[in-house]
Image 1 (tube, rainbow, N blue to C red):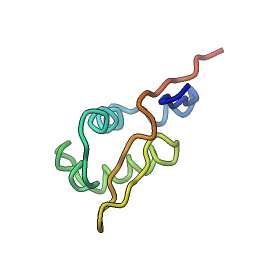
Image 2: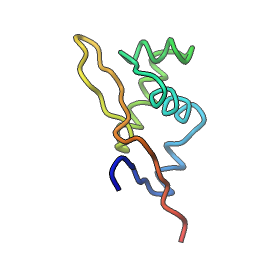
Image 3: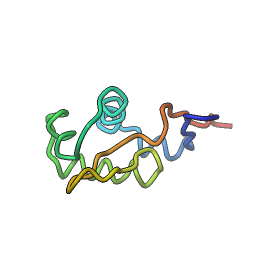
Image 4: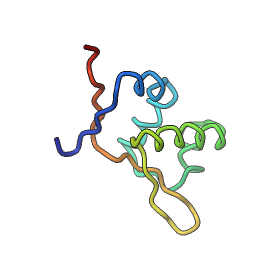
Length: 86
């Protein structure tokens, strides 16, 4: 399905913490110009946001676009779906 990111249940347990869900929702709603800008938007420490983004990128949920000297975090897909437990 186009525009949909499917992740396993195990990955969801790791990736979808409340803080990371907040990042995902913010990236869904707003165009953020940098990791520092995202940290300001969330009122969180930049290093913590960077760590959360790195995990989301590792799982293919987030990618980065170069924006001058900054990296702009973007969702790879519009929707995230978690595989059901079978």
